[in-house]
Length: 244
View (cartoon, rainbow, N blue to C red):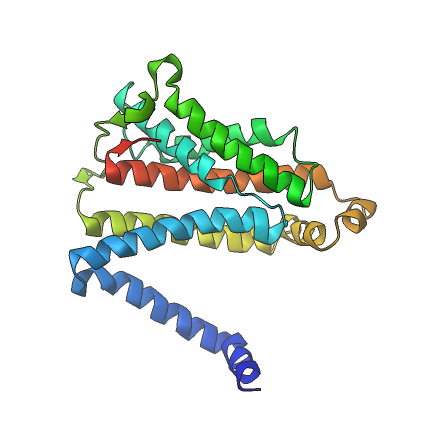
């Protein structure tokens, strides 16, 4: 009963707004009073929150069991590393490009398997993660550096400011998380978001009502992979190297 009352209390709009402002104030002020170690921890919390947002689109919204999500994180990180080190493109400018590369790879690999359900899709995505790892180790075209990976990634810059400190990366990752979370919130309330939920609850019923199940499942998979690619870019910029 107490738990139910707490949920009802938290569901009220003024309470939600107050909690949102408290969370915002905590996140903004945290780097100014916490040690460098805890600011770094906060950065990784934000990084995994970004990965979680992508996985939530795939698993939470549509109900697709994907255990190969880290593969698209790696693809985004390697896309950043290769395009920066080999071709000299700015690291921060590669943020959307790494997302597009990861999303494009997701579209290529998921198109033939998106009709699978449950455990079958789960097994295929596990294999996908292992395939990506082996490809990176085998150093195709001399691009990925094999087991040694790619080193020497340039530090990102924003309006002339070099992003180098834990605080800089903390604000970078949480800014991206905030933008993505707001965009996904709007998407949840749209016709696409409602259709995703119909598919998750009853795929056959959704299809009988005229919902394009295959296209919407593919969209969710690609969008989730794109968010993982964003996380990969930020991770590569922070570490300045990537390896399998």
